[in-house]
Length: 123
Image 1 (cartoon, rainbow, N blue to C red):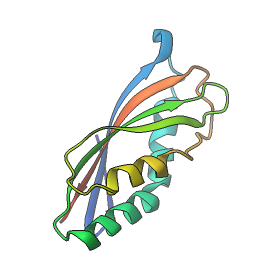
Image 2: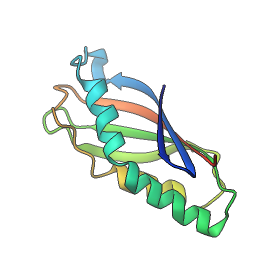
Image 3: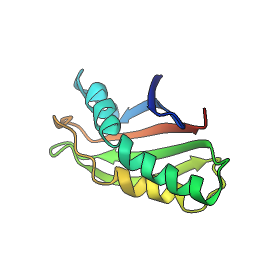
Image 4: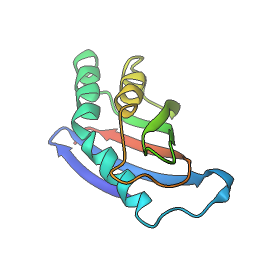
């Protein structure tokens, strides 16, 4: 688990569960590239969270994103909310949309289907 302090009001963590299609072996750098790509989206995820906090100042919880990443381009081809316990109706879809334009710095070489858990917690 990676815990990243995004701001004084947000603790953001990612729990990765990677599944490559056809059980192919992933490039050793793929997991690190995904971590970096998600970290690069921190401000976009935070904007979604800030908007939710404007609607309800006690919003916090988890969003589980299901991402599919193209083998050759390293681009996210699908981003959906697999699970959430956040009651705000707009925030989960905002986070999923923010993840749609992720592109890895190095293509993985195999299609990657993974579930990524993002936690949003007031400190």
